[in-house]
Length: 148
Image (cartoon, rainbow, N blue to C red; front, side, top):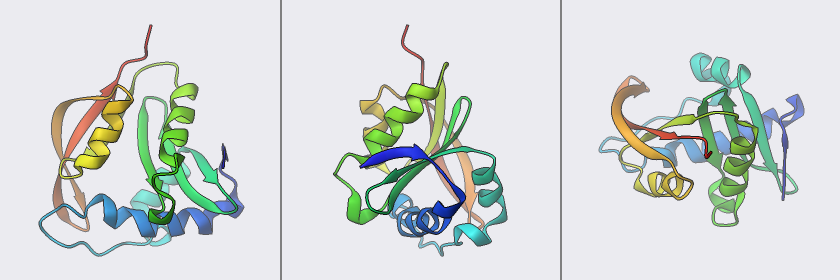
């Protein structure tokens, strides 16, 4: 398993991970969601393209993380690869590149993800409403202060 910088040739693999994992992120919500594929979601695609993207490559893309200074925009691991350390490796790589605090937003209903981020020192301070597929979702904003 290797963490490396994203290359254009990785897009199909990243899009496959996104398609597999995005609805998992929202699986604890009360209503079902219809996936907007990454290449068709103009807002998320623009944010992806403006991000520093790392991929987890294990004979194919099994996960990715997208960030900008101070903000983790996305961290997704394919369901077939979960529990093998890909998410932890991606998050550690993002944290190594950050030289200050890091924030992220996670669906409030996604308690497994919240517990994952808490293991890395993230704490929740506020809730916010964001939309996906024109449906309001309550997110927890989580922050991690850079250790001194």
